[in-house]
Length: 412
Image 1 (tube, rainbow, N blue to C red):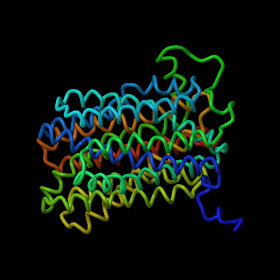
Image 2 (image 1 turned 120 degrees about the vertical axis):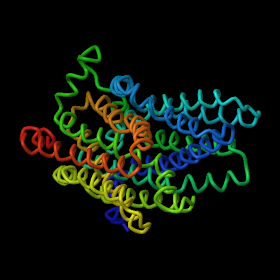
Image 3 (image 1 turned 180 degrees about the horizontal axis):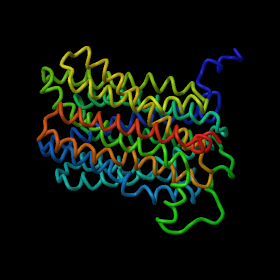
Image 4 (image 1 turned 90 degrees about the vertical axis):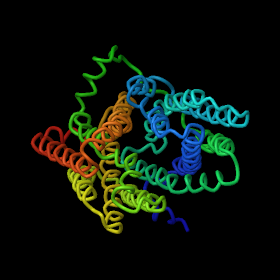
């Protein structure tokens, strides 16, 4: 009985992280319920694919626009109170959406404004929450495991949340989905309070800090993990993630155009990502992460190229499983090495730069891929994107293996 935790990922051996994981899972499920409901609401009110895409753009572009400010906030403000405040803001936005639906508001601009508010809050939430993980586990050696568990939670939420939203939207209005998401924030806020983090672990780093964006960027680029790992993450954000918004067109042009086929393919990618997240949650070793990073971007590019030419549904499902698995390994292993190798005083800004590199570039990549697909075709666009990822992965691997001082910097 006393050794039951030995079967869990190392991070879940920490009681505080178990509290965090339980609360975060509830919150992530609520977030996916809201995301599906908001998309459904926008399309129901406007019947516009453009506004549907623009809503997603508003929810993600602020990772790029506000990344520097979010990173500074994560490093210079008390993280625990700041994260709770952000969660309260996000819950308030959900209640505002619910109120507008219940009052019969049909002005799409009002919903877009709230979507922008959610995007701004999420841009601050990610670096604050991720930098707090080290304070929760209190052990750099298990940060990789903790991030793997967090990825498992995200992908479980991606599977469970939309299913719940689909059932709810059949019987009730979108308002109740928004209310349910607002309530889900009580779980993560309660978990954060129940952990009773030491007061010293919550405030950001102190001491002399450079002023100005250029001075901060100069210091950030001095870290090997930033210089040698983030360019590949940018390539994955720009060229791999666009397959998601293109998926309805892919299903229509490559397969039978049925919504069930779309669901099967998206689920395949989710299963692959969940499997690799489970694997990462059991891997605390630095060396293993570096080896994974030398291979995974190449796998992402190769699988994407193969998927571009596949017209056999079972094969495409397997390829998407591989794409979801390899992409998650690439970005999560990078995140782990960033958090393990940079000084405490800079973790918030480094993680903000990471979110800018991946989540912030994704909407730009989606717009670019859509533009090219209309002119070059889907197959050519996906093939080009996959080839660019392979090139970025090979270049990154060459740089890392030809600069041993960078490897030593990642291992410290």
